[in-house]
Image 1 (cartoon, helix red, strand yellow):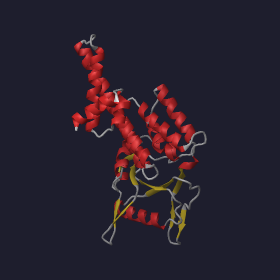
Image 2 (cartoon, helix red, strand yellow; image 1 turned 90 degrees about the vertical axis):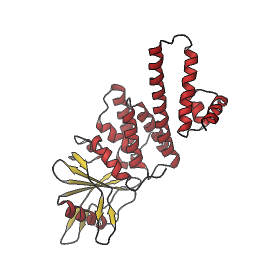
Image 3 (cartoon, rainbow, N blue to C red; image 1 turned 180 degrees about the horizontal axis):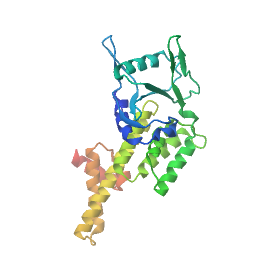
Image 4 (cartoon, helix red, strand yellow; image 1 turned 30 degrees about the vertical axis):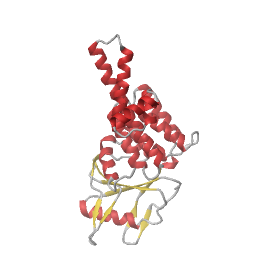
Length: 284
């Protein structure tokens, strides 16, 4: 699955609603109350566009410029050039945070060119306890205490340090936690954030798993709600087994129309492989 170049723009617009009241402090960005996301392109004289990763407007009037780095930035000239262009365009003070992922443990935070001294804040996600983060999110889901801070925790968890889990196990738990969210829109919302922030490091099968698991979950929930209401309204106490079978066949048809495989349909509906194959031929 390929992501568009403006994926960070899209993620930032979604994240604006996900991080009110300083929720970014759970990943080390403190005193940053986001108001809205701003366009990330920077006009240049050479008739081309430069892009920063994410640009937010804060409630104190400053701009929050966030850069994602999976390798150590050796100098800060590039970011300094970005911030000068941002400052010139918006006539605002700029605060820059560099979010380091991967195996980066130190990086320059200051650039002194004599006439100008430039500073950034470095945040190393690999220093954060991913095991504790997943346990916190689990506990909050168990007690109904899910907040916007948990959105941020889960959005960035894949980049944190895990000692009691392998990275693949951690990813599996992240997917399971997303599935536990009671609201379907919240599931898709969070999935978009995870994909947006982790697309560069997720393996193709992990991206596909996250996307497919959520899509199938939505289909099954829709099926369950739709047919539960239908059965209740019609008062079908007799012939319930037949009704369930018809419901499964209808879900299978919808899954095939959305590109699901025979094995997916068999696993998620309980139909036999022969029944699923018959439905697939009918749909196609």
